Image (cartoon, rainbow, N blue to C red):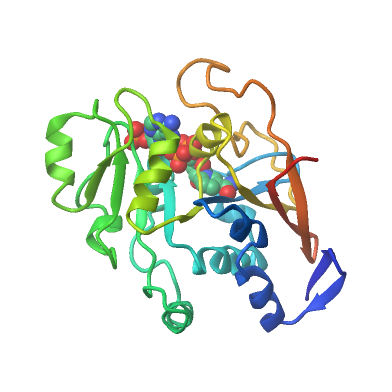
Length: 259
Ligand SMILES: NC(=O)c1ccc[n+]([C@@H]2O[C@H](COP(=O)([O-])OP(=O)(O)OC[C@H]3O[C@@H](n4cnc5c(N)ncnc54)[C@H](OP(=O)(O)O)[C@@H]3O)[C@@H](O)[C@H]2O)c1
């Protein structure tokens, strides 16, 4: 059974969990601007993947929360390496979730937006061939023209920087397309980029009760610009606004805060 530990401790039925996670963030309605939420899972010793994938860190509870978090997104934003590692082909929502969106005046399936500086993506990947909507690729002016030509046949290419990615442009280009509620599923380079720019509004973090060991990276790292070149001047404070628990797995929700 899923429990809410904070605030207002309670056991949550499946319906109550759905209502809890699908409720629009109250902090979002106060800001009146686009909202960037990330969702990650980490082992208790800080690994963001096992054998190069994140799936083995999770369980059925995590999958449920993961699915609910993407259910009310305007757009699902993902870094290219996560696409290369995890696939992302086909429909990303269940039929029930698509019906819920339809009932809430949303298009049944949120578009996928992929961040890639190099455009090192094959046009025949399932993520393009089986996409319910033509995906967006957020890329740089410096990307090779030949790759731009090939990928523009299967996706809409959007420029979000010259030589390096400008996270503010990612947000404004998505908002301009009527997609202000941005749900980002990683990976670590993308979170590192947005964190360095101080543009993370929300972080949903699942703590999986595993000691993974090894050398797996953590949930945020800097892009390839040198050790801490893109680290922010000071760590950004986040406020813990919800704790859910199922078995030994914790689901933490942090929002940009002043704590
Ligand atoms: N634990 C979790 O919740 C979780 C979530 C997601 C992914 N993961 C895992 O994380 C691993 C992938 O990590 P990652 O950090 O490489 O993934 P990533 O952030 O998904 O992808 C990195 C790639 O995205 C593009 N990109 C991201 N930020 C960029 C920037 N600032 N400037 C230019 N391009 C940028 C680049 O694509 P190009 O190379 O095409 O230029 C870059 O190589 C996988 O093992 C995956 O399973 C774990």
